[in-house]
Image (cartoon, rainbow, N blue to C red; front, side):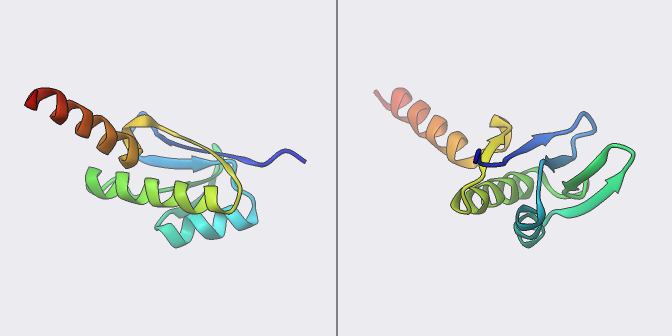
Amino acid sequence: MPEPTITIQVEPSGRVSARGADDLAAVLLRRAGFTEINDWHGLRHRLALTTPFEERTDVATYAAQMLRAARYNVVIDPALDTSRITRLGTKRSALRSQ
């Protein structure tokens, strides 16, 4: 059986949303700080637009880690993945110091 895929991305409005959640993923997303929305776009989980960008990236990365630990495939917007941002920042810092 294929593992479910959850997509965490930045919407055009700047709001962070997660799609593709089943019941367990919904619980994990809510635990991370997402709010469940079911409107004409369908069921999704979002962070408040007023959430500071740094906090949005932390929450999205934390949610992705929990979902991956529960064996979900997670596609996360590179702008939200703090592990990627940290790795890139570390490489850039190392290059500048040489």
